[in-house]
Length: 367
Image (cartoon, rainbow, N blue to C red):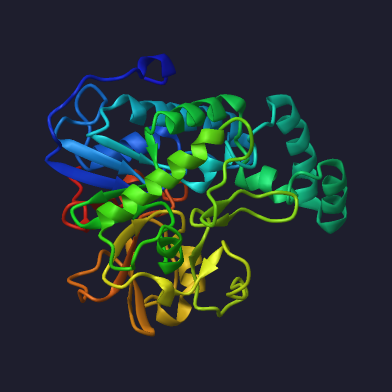
């Protein structure tokens, strides 16, 4: 079951009767399959059941401790190949910042160079500022040691080859529209819509099409320079962390982790008031702990927890951040549904919720 050569293109299937959205699958391949099985999504052959569609929300790499790196690197590729082997009409694969980093921050890095830099990064990450300065002198192309020690810790060049292929063949997408909902890794604000020449009332299908076209245009230079999407996505470099629509998250500007809003775009934070009114979008990218810290004044719970689907509803200058899927939000509200539920942090597959993409409700488990 763990042989990547098993996963070759499957033949066409009937149109799915139900579609699930799965948040950032940064976890062992077997865990991903177990979660899908809990929701009755797998057939007896280990593939998705013919009546089930799936939207993977991006970020298929980089999980676990340093001791997990070899397995995590293998499993990320295995999962992507498994997803891509299903018909396009059954499985939608969205790109996340960890996927884009393979063709962005790490676009020309060899396995040998990465291992050497990561060895120094591990020491720096554990020992503080003095070692960090030494790392930056030795490896000036990287913003900091944390990038290799934690953020992109399971990289290998075969992942880049796979991501490049999936981007060039448009098997990986920037966004997807389904039943009046926009699905995109970290969400869009009015800024992104303006850069695309769209009004904030543009329908999800139009937004998804414009984002896919922008990504396709950027992919024309794959392999020649780090992939960037003008005014939308900038990979990290020696001076900056990665910025833009695949890195950003909402903040109310309170708490130690908040950043000053404003300045050069694209950035890594946005105020919830920037979300397009009347648009419901499903996102991955950010777990409950970060959302809770950034949206504390609007949070309905005192503590963060991994596992549940969550949502943010914004009306004017007021908002509410809560667990579960939204129930009948006002038609003029901006709505975000979060489905990165900390897959690598949960105690058991039964703790992890998926979203029914058609009904916009928490998917029912059958096991």
